[in-house]
Length: 310
Length: 310
Image (cartoon, each protein chain N blue to C red):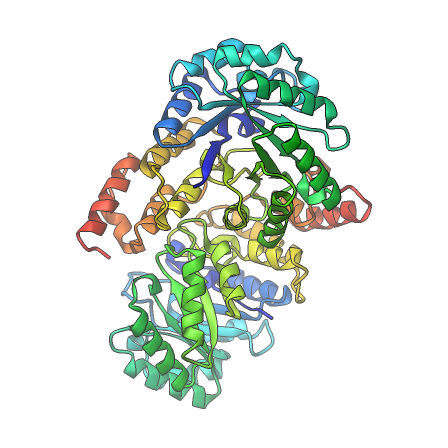
Protein backbone atom coordinates (compact mmCIF):
# COMPACT_ATOMS: atom_id res chain seq x y z
CA UNK A 1 0.00 0.00 0.00
CA UNK A 2 1.39 3.35 -1.06
CA UNK A 3 0.25 6.55 0.60
CA UNK A 4 0.29 9.39 -1.90
CA UNK A 5 0.92 12.98 -1.02
CA UNK A 6 0.29 15.79 -3.48
CA UNK A 7 2.75 18.70 -3.38
CA UNK A 8 1.45 20.76 -6.31
CA UNK A 9 0.25 23.76 -4.32
CA UNK A 10 3.41 23.87 -2.21
CA UNK A 11 6.35 22.83 -4.38
CA UNK A 12 4.59 24.09 -7.51
CA UNK A 13 4.46 27.45 -5.77
CA UNK A 14 8.14 27.96 -6.54
CA UNK A 15 7.06 28.50 -10.12
CA UNK A 16 4.40 31.16 -9.51
CA UNK A 17 5.57 32.71 -6.24
CA UNK A 18 2.97 30.61 -4.41
CA UNK A 19 0.22 32.63 -6.01
CA UNK A 20 -2.47 30.03 -6.72
CA UNK A 21 -5.94 31.59 -6.82
CA UNK A 22 -8.08 30.41 -3.93
CA UNK A 23 -10.73 29.06 -6.30
CA UNK A 24 -8.13 26.91 -7.99
CA UNK A 25 -6.68 25.70 -4.69
CA UNK A 26 -10.13 24.63 -3.52
CA UNK A 27 -10.75 22.85 -6.82
CA UNK A 28 -7.34 21.18 -6.67
CA UNK A 29 -7.81 19.88 -3.16
CA UNK A 30 -11.33 18.64 -3.82
CA UNK A 31 -10.45 16.85 -7.05
CA UNK A 32 -7.24 15.34 -5.70
CA UNK A 33 -8.99 13.89 -2.68
CA UNK A 34 -11.88 12.68 -4.84
CA UNK A 35 -9.30 10.94 -7.04
CA UNK A 36 -7.98 9.04 -4.05
CA UNK A 37 -4.87 11.03 -3.09
CA UNK A 38 -4.52 10.62 0.66
CA UNK A 39 -2.80 13.88 1.61
CA UNK A 40 -2.63 17.31 0.02
CA UNK A 41 0.23 19.57 1.06
CA UNK A 42 -1.36 22.97 0.74
CA UNK A 43 1.55 25.26 1.56
CA UNK A 44 4.28 26.63 3.78
CA UNK A 45 3.46 28.23 7.09
CA UNK A 46 4.92 31.75 7.31
CA UNK A 47 7.16 31.48 4.26
CA UNK A 48 9.60 29.09 2.64
CA UNK A 49 13.27 28.65 3.50
CA UNK A 50 14.34 32.12 2.39
CA UNK A 51 12.17 35.26 2.62
CA UNK A 52 10.54 36.07 -0.73
CA UNK A 53 8.87 39.37 -1.60
CA UNK A 54 5.18 39.34 -2.38
CA UNK A 55 4.83 35.65 -1.62
CA UNK A 56 1.31 34.33 -2.28
CA UNK A 57 -1.13 32.44 -0.13
CA UNK A 58 0.31 28.93 -0.56
CA UNK A 59 3.62 30.31 0.69
CA UNK A 60 2.11 31.81 3.84
CA UNK A 61 -0.47 29.22 4.78
CA UNK A 62 -2.57 31.56 6.91
CA UNK A 63 -5.42 30.29 9.06
CA UNK A 64 -8.15 31.57 6.76
CA UNK A 65 -6.54 29.87 3.76
CA UNK A 66 -6.39 26.53 5.58
CA UNK A 67 -9.97 27.02 6.70
CA UNK A 68 -11.16 27.75 3.16
CA UNK A 69 -9.74 24.43 1.98
CA UNK A 70 -10.95 22.49 5.00
CA UNK A 71 -14.47 23.43 3.92
CA UNK A 72 -14.27 21.36 0.73
CA UNK A 73 -12.71 18.06 1.81
CA UNK A 74 -13.22 15.70 4.72
CA UNK A 75 -10.80 16.02 7.64
CA UNK A 76 -7.51 14.11 7.57
CA UNK A 77 -6.37 15.23 4.12
CA UNK A 78 -4.69 18.60 4.58
CA UNK A 79 -1.08 19.05 5.48
CA UNK A 80 1.25 21.99 5.93
CA UNK A 81 5.01 22.14 5.65
CA UNK A 82 7.15 24.26 7.95
CA UNK A 83 10.68 25.49 8.36
CA UNK A 84 10.91 25.45 12.17
CA UNK A 85 12.67 28.85 12.20
CA UNK A 86 9.53 30.40 10.70
CA UNK A 87 7.03 29.19 13.27
CA UNK A 88 6.39 29.23 16.99
CA UNK A 89 4.56 26.77 19.19
CA UNK A 90 1.45 28.91 18.79
CA UNK A 91 1.28 28.16 15.09
CA UNK A 92 0.68 24.49 15.70
CA UNK A 93 -2.66 24.64 17.53
CA UNK A 94 -3.80 27.41 15.20
CA UNK A 95 -3.10 25.26 12.11
CA UNK A 96 -4.86 22.32 13.73
CA UNK A 97 -7.85 24.41 14.65
CA UNK A 98 -8.04 25.75 11.07
CA UNK A 99 -8.21 22.22 9.69
CA UNK A 100 -4.70 20.90 8.92
CA UNK A 101 -4.03 17.39 10.21
CA UNK A 102 -0.42 16.86 9.17
CA UNK A 103 2.70 18.94 9.68
CA UNK A 104 5.92 18.29 7.80
CA UNK A 105 9.17 19.58 9.24
CA UNK A 106 12.14 20.61 7.11
CA UNK A 107 14.99 20.40 9.60
CA UNK A 108 18.38 22.01 9.25
CA UNK A 109 20.61 18.94 9.16
CA UNK A 110 23.23 20.61 11.33
CA UNK A 111 20.99 21.57 14.23
CA UNK A 112 17.68 19.72 14.16
CA UNK A 113 16.93 19.80 17.88
CA UNK A 114 14.65 22.85 18.04
CA UNK A 115 12.62 21.56 15.11
CA UNK A 116 12.28 18.13 16.64
CA UNK A 117 10.98 19.70 19.85
CA UNK A 118 8.27 21.40 17.78
CA UNK A 119 7.57 18.11 16.07
CA UNK A 120 7.06 16.38 19.42
CA UNK A 121 4.61 19.15 20.31
CA UNK A 122 2.75 18.58 17.01
CA UNK A 123 2.50 14.88 17.82
CA UNK A 124 0.94 15.75 21.16
CA UNK A 125 -1.63 17.94 19.44
CA UNK A 126 -2.75 15.01 17.30
CA UNK A 127 -1.01 15.83 14.02
CA UNK A 128 0.40 13.20 11.73
CA UNK A 129 4.01 14.28 11.23
CA UNK A 130 6.83 13.88 8.75
CA UNK A 131 10.44 14.93 8.82
CA UNK A 132 11.74 15.93 5.42
CA UNK A 133 15.47 15.43 5.12
CA UNK A 134 16.52 17.63 2.25
CA UNK A 135 19.43 17.27 -0.20
CA UNK A 136 20.04 13.69 0.85
CA UNK A 137 22.34 13.28 -2.16
CA UNK A 138 24.86 15.51 -0.40
CA UNK A 139 24.42 14.19 3.11
CA UNK A 140 26.90 11.92 4.83
CA UNK A 141 25.39 8.48 5.41
CA UNK A 142 26.12 8.53 9.14
CA UNK A 143 24.46 11.90 9.57
CA UNK A 144 21.46 10.72 7.58
CA UNK A 145 21.13 7.71 9.89
CA UNK A 146 21.35 9.96 12.97
CA UNK A 147 18.75 12.39 11.67
CA UNK A 148 16.38 9.58 10.76
CA UNK A 149 16.79 7.92 14.16
CA UNK A 150 16.30 11.21 16.02
CA UNK A 151 13.20 11.93 13.93
CA UNK A 152 11.65 8.59 14.72
CA UNK A 153 12.50 8.99 18.39
CA UNK A 154 10.76 12.37 18.40
CA UNK A 155 7.58 10.76 17.13
CA UNK A 156 7.72 11.38 13.38
CA UNK A 157 5.31 9.09 11.58
CA UNK A 158 7.29 9.33 8.36
CA UNK A 159 10.90 10.13 7.49
CA UNK A 160 11.14 11.53 4.01
CA UNK A 161 14.21 11.43 1.80
CA UNK A 162 14.16 14.52 -0.41
CA UNK A 163 16.22 14.30 -3.59
CA UNK A 164 16.27 18.08 -3.77
CA UNK A 165 18.86 18.19 -6.54
CA UNK A 166 17.21 15.50 -8.63
CA UNK A 167 20.56 13.81 -8.98
CA UNK A 168 19.94 10.43 -7.43
CA UNK A 169 19.88 7.13 -9.28
CA UNK A 170 17.47 4.31 -8.47
CA UNK A 171 20.17 2.19 -6.87
CA UNK A 172 21.14 5.07 -4.58
CA UNK A 173 17.52 5.57 -3.60
CA UNK A 174 17.30 1.86 -2.76
CA UNK A 175 20.42 2.09 -0.65
CA UNK A 176 19.25 5.12 1.34
CA UNK A 177 15.76 3.73 1.91
CA UNK A 178 17.34 0.53 3.21
CA UNK A 179 19.69 2.51 5.44
CA UNK A 180 16.92 4.62 6.96
CA UNK A 181 14.62 1.63 7.45
CA UNK A 182 17.32 -0.01 9.51
CA UNK A 183 17.53 2.82 12.05
CA UNK A 184 13.91 3.76 12.64
CA UNK A 185 10.43 2.27 12.77
CA UNK A 186 8.97 5.37 11.13
CA UNK A 187 7.57 4.87 7.65
CA UNK A 188 9.84 6.01 4.80
CA UNK A 189 8.88 8.47 2.08
CA UNK A 190 10.48 9.77 -1.10
CA UNK A 191 10.25 13.32 -2.42
CA UNK A 192 11.72 13.17 -5.93
CA UNK A 193 12.78 15.88 -8.36
CA UNK A 194 13.02 15.17 -12.03
CA UNK A 195 16.23 16.83 -13.20
CA UNK A 196 17.47 13.66 -14.85
CA UNK A 197 14.06 12.30 -15.78
CA UNK A 198 14.54 9.70 -13.04
CA UNK A 199 11.78 10.74 -10.62
CA UNK A 200 9.53 7.88 -11.72
CA UNK A 201 12.33 5.30 -11.75
CA UNK A 202 13.38 6.51 -8.30
CA UNK A 203 9.86 6.27 -6.90
CA UNK A 204 9.61 2.70 -8.17
CA UNK A 205 12.98 1.88 -6.60
CA UNK A 206 11.94 3.50 -3.31
CA UNK A 207 8.73 1.49 -3.03
CA UNK A 208 10.53 -1.73 -3.97
CA UNK A 209 13.02 -1.01 -1.17
CA UNK A 210 10.22 -0.54 1.34
CA UNK A 211 9.21 3.12 1.19
CA UNK A 212 5.47 3.57 1.55
CA UNK A 213 4.95 7.31 1.16
CA UNK A 214 5.42 9.01 -2.22
CA UNK A 215 5.23 12.73 -3.01
CA UNK A 216 4.16 13.86 -6.46
CA UNK A 217 2.66 16.86 -8.20
CA UNK A 218 0.22 17.25 -11.04
CA UNK A 219 2.14 17.87 -14.29
CA UNK A 220 5.22 17.60 -12.09
CA UNK A 221 4.76 21.27 -11.22
CA UNK A 222 7.44 22.05 -8.66
CA UNK A 223 10.80 23.64 -8.03
CA UNK A 224 13.29 23.48 -10.88
CA UNK A 225 12.21 20.93 -13.49
CA UNK A 226 9.58 19.70 -11.07
CA UNK A 227 8.60 16.63 -9.12
CA UNK A 228 7.46 13.12 -9.79
CA UNK A 229 4.46 13.53 -12.13
CA UNK A 230 1.30 12.41 -10.31
CA UNK A 231 -0.50 11.19 -13.41
CA UNK A 232 2.51 9.09 -14.45
CA UNK A 233 2.82 7.64 -10.97
CA UNK A 234 -0.86 6.71 -10.74
CA UNK A 235 -0.69 5.25 -14.26
CA UNK A 236 2.28 3.14 -13.18
CA UNK A 237 0.40 1.88 -10.12
CA UNK A 238 -2.66 1.24 -12.26
CA UNK A 239 -0.80 -0.67 -15.02
CA UNK A 240 0.58 -2.89 -12.31
CA UNK A 241 -2.91 -3.62 -11.05
CA UNK A 242 -2.36 -1.46 -7.97
CA UNK A 243 -5.12 1.04 -8.57
CA UNK A 244 -5.77 1.20 -4.85
CA UNK A 245 -8.88 3.22 -5.47
CA UNK A 246 -7.27 5.94 -7.56
CA UNK A 247 -9.22 7.66 -10.29
CA UNK A 248 -6.62 8.37 -12.96
CA UNK A 249 -9.16 9.94 -15.30
CA UNK A 250 -10.02 12.50 -12.64
CA UNK A 251 -6.37 13.38 -12.08
CA UNK A 252 -5.88 13.72 -15.84
CA UNK A 253 -8.76 16.17 -15.95
CA UNK A 254 -7.10 18.18 -13.21
CA UNK A 255 -3.81 18.12 -15.11
CA UNK A 256 -5.60 19.25 -18.25
CA UNK A 257 -7.09 22.22 -16.40
CA UNK A 258 -3.68 23.09 -14.95
CA UNK A 259 -2.07 23.04 -18.40
CA UNK A 260 -4.63 25.54 -19.57
CA UNK A 261 -4.75 27.76 -16.50
CA UNK A 262 -1.12 28.19 -15.44
CA UNK A 263 1.54 29.43 -17.81
CA UNK A 264 4.09 28.19 -15.28
CA UNK A 265 2.80 24.62 -15.54
CA UNK A 266 5.04 23.22 -18.25
CA UNK A 267 3.14 20.39 -19.92
CA UNK A 268 4.50 16.96 -19.18
CA UNK A 269 4.30 14.27 -21.85
CA UNK A 270 1.04 14.68 -23.80
CA UNK A 271 -1.84 13.40 -21.68
CA UNK A 272 -3.64 11.54 -24.53
CA UNK A 273 -0.48 9.51 -25.13
CA UNK A 274 -0.42 8.57 -21.46
CA UNK A 275 -3.99 7.35 -21.84
CA UNK A 276 -2.93 5.15 -24.77
CA UNK A 277 -0.03 3.71 -22.81
CA UNK A 278 -2.23 3.08 -19.81
CA UNK A 279 -4.59 0.95 -21.89
CA UNK A 280 -1.82 -0.57 -24.06
CA UNK A 281 -3.34 0.94 -27.20
CA UNK A 282 -1.27 1.75 -30.25
CA UNK A 283 -0.60 5.28 -31.45
CA UNK A 284 -2.95 4.64 -34.36
CA UNK A 285 -5.85 4.59 -31.88
CA UNK A 286 -5.21 8.18 -30.85
CA UNK A 287 -7.33 9.51 -33.72
CA UNK A 288 -10.30 7.63 -32.24
CA UNK A 289 -10.10 9.46 -28.93
CA UNK A 290 -12.37 12.48 -28.55
CA UNK A 291 -10.64 15.84 -28.45
CA UNK A 292 -11.30 18.28 -25.67
CA UNK A 293 -12.02 16.77 -22.29
CA UNK A 294 -9.26 14.35 -21.38
CA UNK A 295 -11.62 12.42 -19.12
CA UNK A 296 -13.73 11.67 -22.23
CA UNK A 297 -10.61 10.42 -23.98
CA UNK A 298 -9.91 8.23 -20.95
CA UNK A 299 -13.39 6.73 -21.04
CA UNK A 300 -13.20 6.19 -24.80
CA UNK A 301 -9.83 4.43 -24.46
CA UNK A 302 -11.21 2.15 -21.77
CA UNK A 303 -14.11 1.35 -24.09
CA UNK A 304 -11.74 0.62 -26.99
CA UNK A 305 -9.79 -1.76 -24.79
CA UNK A 306 -12.94 -3.53 -23.65
CA UNK A 307 -14.05 -3.98 -27.25
CA UNK A 308 -10.77 -5.53 -28.28
CA UNK A 309 -8.95 -2.72 -30.07
CA UNK A 310 -5.77 -4.21 -28.72
CA UNK B 1 28.98 -2.00 -22.02
CA UNK B 2 25.91 -0.48 -23.63
CA UNK B 3 25.75 0.10 -27.36
CA UNK B 4 23.67 3.18 -28.09
CA UNK B 5 21.62 3.66 -31.20
CA UNK B 6 20.11 7.02 -32.10
CA UNK B 7 16.67 6.94 -33.75
CA UNK B 8 15.96 10.68 -33.99
CA UNK B 9 16.01 10.96 -37.77
CA UNK B 10 13.90 7.84 -38.24
CA UNK B 11 11.39 7.64 -35.39
CA UNK B 12 11.41 11.42 -35.03
CA UNK B 13 10.34 11.52 -38.65
CA UNK B 14 6.81 10.53 -37.61
CA UNK B 15 6.51 14.04 -36.25
CA UNK B 16 7.58 15.97 -39.35
CA UNK B 17 6.73 13.51 -42.13
CA UNK B 18 10.40 12.52 -42.24
CA UNK B 19 11.28 15.92 -43.61
CA UNK B 20 14.59 16.71 -41.91
CA UNK B 21 16.69 19.13 -43.98
CA UNK B 22 19.81 17.48 -45.33
CA UNK B 23 22.03 20.02 -43.60
CA UNK B 24 20.47 19.17 -40.29
CA UNK B 25 20.74 15.43 -40.89
CA UNK B 26 24.44 15.78 -41.64
CA UNK B 27 24.94 17.90 -38.53
CA UNK B 28 22.96 15.42 -36.44
CA UNK B 29 24.93 12.42 -37.60
CA UNK B 30 28.29 14.13 -37.19
CA UNK B 31 27.56 15.44 -33.71
CA UNK B 32 26.00 12.21 -32.48
CA UNK B 33 28.97 10.16 -33.58
CA UNK B 34 31.39 12.73 -32.17
CA UNK B 35 29.51 12.46 -28.86
CA UNK B 36 30.12 8.73 -28.79
CA UNK B 37 26.83 7.29 -30.04
CA UNK B 38 27.73 4.05 -31.81
CA UNK B 39 24.96 3.82 -34.41
CA UNK B 40 22.73 6.37 -36.07
CA UNK B 41 19.53 5.10 -37.65
CA UNK B 42 19.09 7.51 -40.51
CA UNK B 43 15.78 6.40 -41.98
CA UNK B 44 13.43 3.91 -43.59
CA UNK B 45 14.21 2.44 -46.97
CA UNK B 46 11.34 3.00 -49.40
CA UNK B 47 8.80 4.14 -46.84
CA UNK B 48 7.52 3.21 -43.40
CA UNK B 49 4.90 0.59 -42.58
CA UNK B 50 2.04 2.34 -44.33
CA UNK B 51 2.36 4.52 -47.45
CA UNK B 52 2.43 8.22 -46.57
CA UNK B 53 1.96 11.05 -49.07
CA UNK B 54 4.85 13.44 -49.57
CA UNK B 55 7.15 11.52 -47.27
CA UNK B 56 10.53 13.19 -46.79
CA UNK B 57 14.06 11.96 -47.21
CA UNK B 58 14.46 10.14 -43.91
CA UNK B 59 11.36 8.12 -44.81
CA UNK B 60 12.74 7.06 -48.18
CA UNK B 61 16.40 6.53 -47.43
CA UNK B 62 17.57 6.89 -51.01
CA UNK B 63 21.14 6.11 -52.02
CA UNK B 64 22.17 9.74 -52.43
CA UNK B 65 20.85 10.56 -48.95
CA UNK B 66 22.84 7.73 -47.39
CA UNK B 67 25.88 8.81 -49.36
CA UNK B 68 25.56 12.42 -48.20
CA UNK B 69 25.69 11.26 -44.58
CA UNK B 70 28.45 8.72 -45.16
CA UNK B 71 30.63 11.68 -46.19
CA UNK B 72 30.60 13.18 -42.69
CA UNK B 73 31.22 10.22 -40.38
CA UNK B 74 33.57 7.26 -40.35
CA UNK B 75 32.20 3.94 -41.65
CA UNK B 76 30.35 1.61 -39.26
CA UNK B 77 27.95 4.17 -37.83
CA UNK B 78 25.03 4.39 -40.24
CA UNK B 79 22.04 2.13 -40.15
CA UNK B 80 18.79 1.85 -42.06
CA UNK B 81 15.52 0.28 -41.01
CA UNK B 82 13.32 -1.66 -43.43
CA UNK B 83 9.91 -3.20 -43.66
CA UNK B 84 10.74 -6.24 -45.79
CA UNK B 85 7.64 -5.74 -47.93
CA UNK B 86 9.08 -2.41 -49.09
CA UNK B 87 12.46 -3.67 -50.33
CA UNK B 88 13.97 -6.21 -52.68
CA UNK B 89 17.27 -8.01 -52.53
CA UNK B 90 18.71 -5.30 -54.78
CA UNK B 91 18.21 -2.68 -52.11
CA UNK B 92 20.66 -4.36 -49.79
CA UNK B 93 23.87 -4.07 -51.85
CA UNK B 94 22.84 -0.57 -52.93
CA UNK B 95 22.48 0.56 -49.32
CA UNK B 96 25.78 -1.03 -48.45
CA UNK B 97 27.52 0.58 -51.39
CA UNK B 98 26.06 3.97 -50.40
CA UNK B 99 27.55 3.68 -46.93
CA UNK B 100 25.09 1.99 -44.55
CA UNK B 101 26.57 -0.76 -42.39
CA UNK B 102 23.54 -1.93 -40.44
CA UNK B 103 20.08 -3.00 -41.51
CA UNK B 104 17.22 -3.40 -39.07
CA UNK B 105 14.27 -5.56 -40.02
CA UNK B 106 10.73 -4.94 -38.80
CA UNK B 107 9.14 -8.33 -39.32
CA UNK B 108 5.44 -9.06 -39.46
CA UNK B 109 5.06 -11.35 -36.44
CA UNK B 110 2.63 -13.64 -38.28
CA UNK B 111 4.83 -14.35 -41.31
CA UNK B 112 8.46 -13.44 -40.72
CA UNK B 113 10.04 -15.90 -43.14
CA UNK B 114 10.48 -13.66 -46.18
CA UNK B 115 12.01 -10.95 -44.04
CA UNK B 116 14.38 -13.37 -42.35
CA UNK B 117 15.57 -14.55 -45.76
CA UNK B 118 16.42 -10.95 -46.61
CA UNK B 119 18.15 -10.64 -43.26
CA UNK B 120 20.32 -13.65 -44.02
CA UNK B 121 21.24 -12.01 -47.31
CA UNK B 122 22.19 -8.80 -45.46
CA UNK B 123 24.42 -10.82 -43.14
CA UNK B 124 26.17 -12.29 -46.18
CA UNK B 125 26.78 -8.81 -47.52
CA UNK B 126 28.57 -7.81 -44.35
CA UNK B 127 25.85 -5.80 -42.60
CA UNK B 128 25.35 -5.82 -38.88
CA UNK B 129 21.67 -6.74 -38.47
CA UNK B 130 18.87 -6.37 -35.98
CA UNK B 131 15.37 -7.77 -35.87
CA UNK B 132 12.89 -5.36 -34.32
CA UNK B 133 9.96 -7.16 -32.76
CA UNK B 134 7.24 -4.56 -32.52
CA UNK B 135 4.35 -4.24 -30.05
CA UNK B 136 5.88 -6.81 -27.73
CA UNK B 137 3.36 -5.79 -25.06
CA UNK B 138 0.64 -7.47 -27.12
CA UNK B 139 2.61 -10.50 -28.26
CA UNK B 140 2.10 -13.95 -26.84
CA UNK B 141 5.19 -15.09 -24.94
CA UNK B 142 5.57 -18.28 -26.93
CA UNK B 143 5.41 -16.42 -30.22
CA UNK B 144 7.95 -13.92 -28.95
CA UNK B 145 10.31 -16.76 -28.06
CA UNK B 146 9.84 -18.33 -31.51
CA UNK B 147 10.47 -15.07 -33.34
CA UNK B 148 13.57 -14.36 -31.27
CA UNK B 149 14.95 -17.84 -31.85
CA UNK B 150 14.26 -17.69 -35.59
CA UNK B 151 15.90 -14.28 -35.78
CA UNK B 152 19.06 -15.48 -34.07
CA UNK B 153 19.13 -18.58 -36.27
CA UNK B 154 18.92 -16.35 -39.35
CA UNK B 155 22.01 -14.48 -38.23
CA UNK B 156 20.59 -11.41 -36.50
CA UNK B 157 23.22 -9.78 -34.32
CA UNK B 158 20.60 -8.16 -32.11
CA UNK B 159 16.99 -8.94 -31.28
CA UNK B 160 15.15 -5.79 -30.28
CA UNK B 161 12.09 -5.63 -28.11
CA UNK B 162 10.02 -2.64 -29.21
CA UNK B 163 7.56 -1.29 -26.65
CA UNK B 164 5.62 0.39 -29.44
CA UNK B 165 2.69 1.29 -27.22
CA UNK B 166 4.82 2.60 -24.40
CA UNK B 167 2.76 0.54 -21.99
CA UNK B 168 5.35 -1.74 -20.44
CA UNK B 169 6.51 -1.63 -16.84
CA UNK B 170 10.10 -2.23 -15.79
CA UNK B 171 9.32 -5.66 -14.36
CA UNK B 172 7.72 -6.72 -17.66
CA UNK B 173 10.76 -5.50 -19.57
CA UNK B 174 12.97 -7.55 -17.26
CA UNK B 175 10.83 -10.61 -17.82
CA UNK B 176 10.86 -10.33 -21.61
CA UNK B 177 14.58 -9.63 -21.81
CA UNK B 178 15.18 -12.70 -19.68
CA UNK B 179 12.86 -14.76 -21.87
CA UNK B 180 14.53 -13.72 -25.10
CA UNK B 181 18.02 -14.20 -23.69
CA UNK B 182 17.14 -17.77 -22.91
CA UNK B 183 16.27 -18.68 -26.49
CA UNK B 184 18.98 -16.97 -28.54
CA UNK B 185 22.62 -16.00 -28.39
CA UNK B 186 21.89 -12.74 -30.22
CA UNK B 187 22.36 -9.58 -28.21
CA UNK B 188 19.15 -8.03 -26.83
CA UNK B 189 18.03 -4.47 -27.40
CA UNK B 190 15.22 -2.27 -26.15
CA UNK B 191 13.32 0.33 -28.16
CA UNK B 192 11.24 2.24 -25.63
CA UNK B 193 8.39 4.71 -26.01
CA UNK B 194 7.54 7.12 -23.30
CA UNK B 195 3.75 7.15 -23.03
CA UNK B 196 3.83 6.51 -19.30
CA UNK B 197 7.09 8.34 -18.64
CA UNK B 198 8.70 4.92 -18.10
CA UNK B 199 11.13 4.83 -21.03
CA UNK B 200 14.09 5.59 -18.78
CA UNK B 201 13.03 3.20 -16.03
CA UNK B 202 12.48 0.53 -18.68
CA UNK B 203 15.89 1.07 -20.25
CA UNK B 204 17.50 0.71 -16.83
CA UNK B 205 15.54 -2.49 -16.21
CA UNK B 206 16.49 -3.85 -19.64
CA UNK B 207 20.20 -3.32 -19.10
CA UNK B 208 20.02 -4.79 -15.60
CA UNK B 209 18.36 -7.88 -17.11
CA UNK B 210 21.11 -8.24 -19.69
CA UNK B 211 20.13 -6.14 -22.68
CA UNK B 212 23.12 -4.40 -24.23
CA UNK B 213 21.62 -2.29 -27.03
CA UNK B 214 19.49 0.76 -26.25
CA UNK B 215 17.63 2.99 -28.70
CA UNK B 216 17.05 6.62 -27.87
CA UNK B 217 16.36 9.93 -29.57
CA UNK B 218 17.44 13.47 -28.87
CA UNK B 219 14.68 15.29 -26.94
CA UNK B 220 12.84 11.99 -27.21
CA UNK B 221 11.65 13.04 -30.65
CA UNK B 222 9.72 10.09 -32.03
CA UNK B 223 6.32 8.61 -32.72
CA UNK B 224 3.56 9.52 -30.27
CA UNK B 225 5.02 11.00 -27.09
CA UNK B 226 8.46 9.94 -28.24
CA UNK B 227 11.30 7.64 -27.27
CA UNK B 228 13.77 7.28 -24.49
CA UNK B 229 15.45 10.71 -24.26
CA UNK B 230 19.10 10.40 -25.28
CA UNK B 231 20.37 13.15 -23.03
CA UNK B 232 18.62 11.64 -20.01
CA UNK B 233 19.98 8.20 -20.83
CA UNK B 234 23.56 9.43 -21.21
CA UNK B 235 23.21 11.46 -18.01
CA UNK B 236 22.05 8.31 -16.23
CA UNK B 237 25.04 6.37 -17.52
CA UNK B 238 27.32 9.24 -16.60
CA UNK B 239 25.98 9.67 -13.05
CA UNK B 240 26.64 5.99 -12.53
CA UNK B 241 30.24 6.44 -13.62
CA UNK B 242 29.54 4.69 -16.92
CA UNK B 243 30.43 7.54 -19.22
CA UNK B 244 31.90 5.05 -21.68
CA UNK B 245 33.34 7.87 -23.71
CA UNK B 246 30.13 9.79 -24.17
CA UNK B 247 30.18 13.57 -24.43
CA UNK B 248 26.96 14.64 -22.73
CA UNK B 249 27.70 18.33 -23.28
CA UNK B 250 27.84 17.75 -27.02
CA UNK B 251 24.52 15.90 -27.05
CA UNK B 252 22.97 18.69 -25.00
CA UNK B 253 24.14 21.19 -27.59
CA UNK B 254 22.51 19.09 -30.27
CA UNK B 255 19.28 18.92 -28.24
CA UNK B 256 19.39 22.68 -27.77
CA UNK B 257 19.66 23.20 -31.53
CA UNK B 258 16.79 20.79 -32.15
CA UNK B 259 14.57 22.64 -29.67
CA UNK B 260 15.16 25.83 -31.61
CA UNK B 261 14.98 24.43 -35.12
CA UNK B 262 12.05 22.01 -35.10
CA UNK B 263 8.59 23.05 -33.98
CA UNK B 264 7.74 19.34 -33.79
CA UNK B 265 10.49 18.69 -31.25
CA UNK B 266 8.59 19.12 -28.00
CA UNK B 267 11.11 20.16 -25.37
CA UNK B 268 11.87 17.52 -22.80
CA UNK B 269 12.63 18.57 -19.24
CA UNK B 270 14.63 21.84 -19.28
CA UNK B 271 18.21 21.10 -20.30
CA UNK B 272 19.85 23.40 -17.69
CA UNK B 273 18.06 21.48 -14.93
CA UNK B 274 19.44 18.25 -16.33
CA UNK B 275 22.90 19.78 -16.11
CA UNK B 276 22.31 20.62 -12.44
CA UNK B 277 21.12 17.10 -11.70
CA UNK B 278 24.06 15.61 -13.54
CA UNK B 279 26.51 17.48 -11.31
CA UNK B 280 24.37 17.17 -8.14
CA UNK B 281 24.06 20.96 -7.88
CA UNK B 282 21.13 22.64 -6.19
CA UNK B 283 18.53 24.68 -8.05
CA UNK B 284 20.03 27.80 -6.48
CA UNK B 285 23.13 27.30 -8.66
CA UNK B 286 21.09 27.68 -11.83
CA UNK B 287 21.46 31.45 -11.76
CA UNK B 288 25.24 31.00 -11.96
CA UNK B 289 25.07 29.10 -15.23
CA UNK B 290 25.58 31.17 -18.39
CA UNK B 291 22.52 31.63 -20.57
CA UNK B 292 22.61 30.79 -24.24
CA UNK B 293 24.86 27.93 -25.23
CA UNK B 294 24.00 24.89 -23.15
CA UNK B 295 27.49 23.50 -23.59
CA UNK B 296 28.79 26.61 -21.79
CA UNK B 297 26.33 25.93 -18.98
CA UNK B 298 27.63 22.36 -18.86
CA UNK B 299 31.24 23.52 -18.57
CA UNK B 300 30.33 26.09 -15.93
CA UNK B 301 28.49 23.47 -13.89
CA UNK B 302 31.48 21.14 -14.05
CA UNK B 303 33.63 24.02 -12.85
CA UNK B 304 31.26 24.79 -9.98
CA UNK B 305 31.39 21.17 -8.90
CA UNK B 306 35.17 21.11 -9.02
CA UNK B 307 35.35 24.25 -6.89
CA UNK B 308 33.10 22.80 -4.24
CA UNK B 309 29.73 24.42 -4.89
CA UNK B 310 28.23 21.19 -3.67
